[in-house]
Image (tube, rainbow, N blue to C red; front, side, top):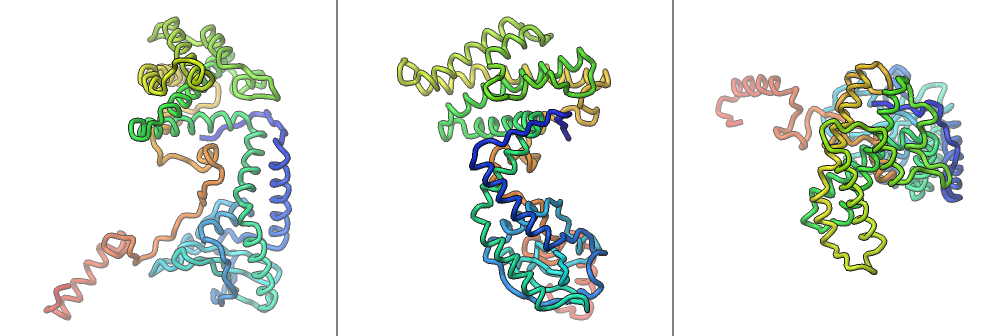
Length: 398
């Protein structure tokens, strides 16, 4: 689901380290993008497909390829596989092509072990020496900056979150659900009581803000997130609505058709008081760590109550034809329950340094990763081959 900030573009850059990393990243981008073009389709490659290896880049393949994706800002597609090529083995699972004035470079891995750079389809217009220099240049920039890659990604993502506060809010909403579910799964195993308590309180605050936003959209019948709604999901300098302030707004604006509103906020205030004792007054009161566990169990249903209200508000939004929720997106919040739905941007809200390359591994025809040693699409073909083999060698047990 796509969310738009609808003009709420905020150009605050954060601290000096963030600014420095971002400026440095942009300088690297300009250098590489000035020298190379990322080849996006098979038709853009030369007709001659031959080539030779030039050098190795001493960086883990997944990190190196993620770095290149990040630098060139592209959604990677395996253009060879898209063009209909099928690969017998799995020695190369990642492959990129870059073009310079000297010709084409092929960047690939060998069994996810090394990164190689080679010339590709060298034509009369290209030069072998020029491509060697291109390869050395690429190697130098990748190896020289890979240790700063985490800083670059964090700086880049923080800039994005500053620019698009509504996207930040929605990504936080989903990532909070994922983190809370993971915390609850390990609740009794690792004694993550305090983490679960803090995540639960943060989740309830986020759900209340979102429910107020949906309510206001439905009441106003607007088709976008109006600028004066920003107070619900954006902190500008030291100006923001506190958790208790959100309680007051929610109590006044949100309908609770299936639950006693007074009792809900009474319990919500009790939960917040426990959180504050656990965080701010743990050492100066008789509060015990185990009370965090008891509080999570006692008040966990509050988030489910709010989830039901949110689902109803989203359905009403679709019925009215307002807001940003489309009919095929109803129930999107249920994806919070499914870790496999964790997208790159949402994952970045949890940890922007996680290596989550867009590249999907190739599907070779024969590989140890398949239970039978070959791609499932070859099942019938392999049966026919075995039949023919038995005809010619009837004594064979295979």
